[in-house]
Image 1: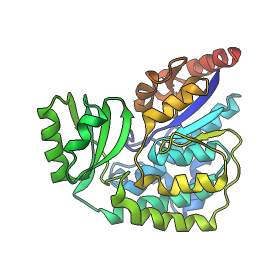
Image 2: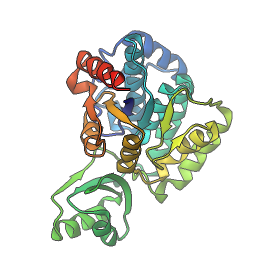
Image 3: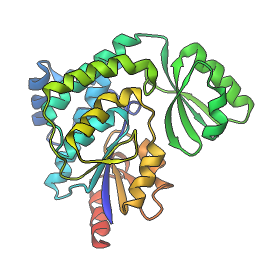
Image 4: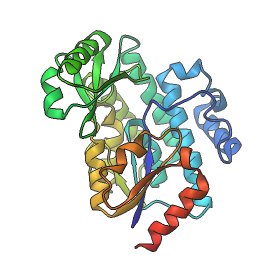
Length: 300
């Protein structure tokens, strides 16, 4: 059975998340050199109020843990990331250099935040199918299809509140305003996505050494140009995470391991992975992850 590394999007970030990373001093020095700033300060409470800092923290954390797993002898057969998580996924697959990813993610965060500095964001709605939610959207957009009955909408605060009220009226079980200040994964971000795509012209990507599974298209990509397009444009494209995990299951993934921080993707992956299991490294710890990975390898 194959091993998938999953990388989270915005939401599970927390103050101090870059402190205590495996080989953290080396990783933060590398990040600081690429960004020309002190990367260790990106995880302060004040810094994490900004999209740029959040996205950089998720990238740095993901790569620190990927490198630790490699030191322990564990390499992925497949990688996939939700939203910003696609960048550490591409680095983990060997398609994108860490230093290039840092500079691109810094630009990505700036572009997103500048486009919508306030009054917009994302709201998760649980308990409705896509066919039930779409007629309620009004001025909002369907941003994420995380599970069969867990969707995320994007739009202005006022528009999302209206959709939430309509959703509750027809049986939605839970409404949750996410800790994201930008209306990601919809046409509202077409312009900043195009600007990020232009920045990729100065970056060289290579063919990944393992399968890169897009969280937007749910397709495995190997061509560098396709991966560059996926990374640049995913901020303006609907996340199809449920379909991506179904695709992972079809490709014999026996263990999906979520990089810190958080465990959201672990919960979302368990139902689609009909022949495997998912595990949060943050919650389960490194020894258990290595043991389950060894068992998955033995079943090949």
